[in-house]
Image (cartoon, rainbow, N blue to C red):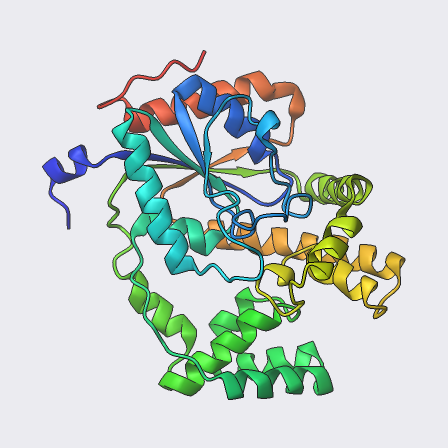
Length: 330
């Protein structure tokens, strides 16, 4: 364990998490300006260039002068792994500290965020491309649920975290078991080690709200994305040669619209699936974050109390960091 002195000397890292559409972006801008912070995106999809609407990415003119990191750093045809994210994010945190500012990670990709907070050690399990091809063919013939059932039989813990439509991650979990003889959940548990240890002095804040209100916000967000040109964005990516099998194109919004553009579903079916899958995703996000140690939950259901909520969040931050840093959250 870290000694008391070492704990006191760790650099601070502010983290804001929560399900999609809960309101992280607007709050993060307000907090960043109050705290002299720079924002690091904790979203596995915002790293890809040209994928703007479907990832709810802020454009530079919307950032209100707040520096943002880990956005638009990879072409969409090239995958970006959690271990790469962890490394690049650690560099960004060091750079922000070197400028005397507060690193502020904001996002909803639980494994990515947690890997940085606790320095997970990722193992290279190798790859079996022939097996991946075999499993894709199996899913195409028997359906997504049958593939998910295969995983549930050998690794129920990982299967419980993955939606049957998350073909890429399901196949990867099956592949790890084939290569190592161990469930992915066991390997990840070993990689995490003692999650009580962190290289940073953490302040972890999670946003939540009434489930029905959240689902309503999700549906409204999908409608806004479609009005903003999500279909055209996906069409442009496909026309540019980004394969549907790319990691980036498996993201919410992209896989559903790509299926519509390829004539596999109607537009109405694609929209219905996107809204449903996004609600399921939000549920999985909440489940993941509820297991994060030391997370302070804030219910943001009542918009009329925004001012009081902001003050309470600032009080949480001041309580965590007051030994080393004083913040003005007025």
